[in-house]
Structures are given as C-alpha cells and as structure tokens.
Image 1: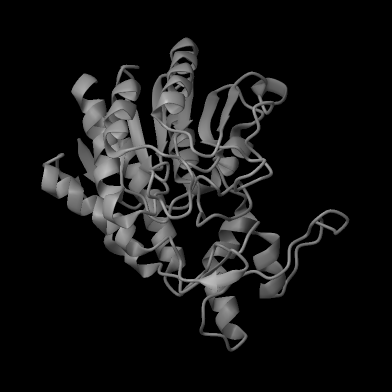
Image 2: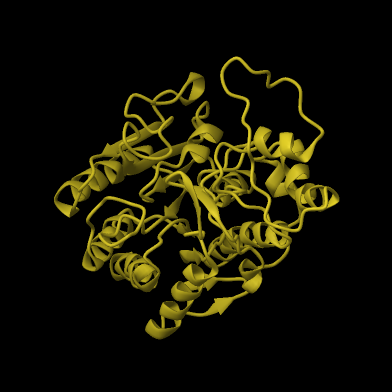
Length: 344
C-alpha cells in the first residue's frame, strides 16, 4: 500500500494543552507520525511519497473562508501582540453570547474559531496543517489514478475540525476534504468510517444534512467522554441527511468482544449504502495502553479491524487521526493496513 507523508508535520509542535485542569505537554506530538512512518518502513508496507500542492480551493469546499483566513493569519496576529509563545484560546461564545459578530482581536478570534484549548497555534502550524491536507488529497489522487487503496499519514489530525472551528488537536478536516474532493471528481456517494476513540464531531457536522456522504463513528460514549456534546446514537442526520449518520457510542472498558460486533454492523450499513469509495478516519487511540482513552483493544485486534474494512471491497483512503500510545501507534496503524490488504 502506498503511503503519503510530509516532514512538514514537524513544524507544528505545541508546548502545552489544557487538560485535566492544568497545562500539560501536548499528547499530540511529532513522534506520533514518526513512529507510524518507521513501522511502515520496517514492515515493507509499500512506497512512501511526498504530497503535491493542491491550493486552497479543496479546503474552501469544506471550510468557511473566514476560518481558513484566520488559520493562515493567526500566528502573525498573535505575534503582533508581542507574544512569541504558543497561542491558545481563553474565551468561547457559549449560550447567551453573540456569535453574529466576529471579533477583531486575536484573543476573541481564537475563541470564536475553536471549541477547546487543545489547539495550540505555533509559528509552523499553518504550513503543517496545509501539508496535512495535501497528504490526504495526494492520497486521493493516487487512489483514483491507480485504483489501489492508499494511506495518508496525516498530522495534525482533522476529524474534530468542523467547517468553521478547530478543536481536539484538529484544524483542517482532512477526511472531509478528501471526501468532498471525491465527490467533486465524479463520485456519487462516499462513506466515511471513523474508528478513532473520540467521536468525529467535525466530520459529522460538515455532512449532517447531506445524503451523498454517509458518516459512521465508533467511539467512547459522549455522556462520559470527549467531545461530550456530539456523538449520541440518536444523531441520525437532518433534512436530506436524515438516516445517513450512524453513531456507535461504546462504554469505557470496551474490548473486541463488543467493538467487533459494532464494527460489523457499521460495515453492513456501508455495504447497504453502496458508496463509490470509502474514507477511513484511522485513529488507534482505542488501544488498551492509550494514555487518554479508555478502550481495551489489543495489537492483534487492529488486524481484525483491517480485515473487516477490507471485506467491503471498496477503494479506500485511510487518513491518520489519533493515537497517543506512541510506542505502539505504528504497530497498530500498520496492523489495520496489513489486515485490510490481506483480504482486499
């Protein structure tokens, strides 16, 4: 399987995030992608190529123009205030506050365009997230050109980013950008399967009112797990999208005996939808040793996951999302891809 990768992800390396009521070193760090790349090479998964530039247009097909402009300018606005440390938001427009007036000050903008304090912006963030989107789009290019499924080793991840806000380590929604690009290139229907431990709230919200993208997510129950405010089973779509959104909230302590049947049900729904292609938001923070998650999947379970996805027989673009047990993230991600290739 071909892997798309860019060293530009090293340009984004936040010092701290607000978690558990305190500032801690970021769990989302460059070594995550480095370990996956190392495992791809060790196992001989396939060739590794750099992404090509796709411009802003594919991003603007998914994201609000004002939001994209904010991401491009945020660091310079932050520096203009005499600040050279990481930018983090400090205030959010919650219930009762106005959202129809966009602030001009960088602190207001940071809050307006985010939903948590896990999204540090650094001097290199814009280039890193641009390159991450290009990784996904180049993966799509090669999949369409060759007919073979592809692995987009994206970092930073993307599935928590909505059309006009960032959060959860995510700035641009790589999976959504790739799915929309598939449609723009002639696909009639695309399915997105999100197997990250955390619900893909951004992806859901982008496509919630549409029938040309089916979204399915297996994740920690949002009554007790981040992102808390989306991901419930009764969120099934709206308007034209009614019936095309499927959430599988699972309890803390979920192992393969419960995860496997949920994945099988999601795969059956994908098969019934009969999409032209599949995008997999590949998070491996479902691993039993992940430091910020509470599922109990083991290394071998990721082979089974890949086999289940491969059994669909669909052209598939894998887009890297979460996974924070750094020593095992490469093993688990490549196990999914190897399991997929064993049956696809």
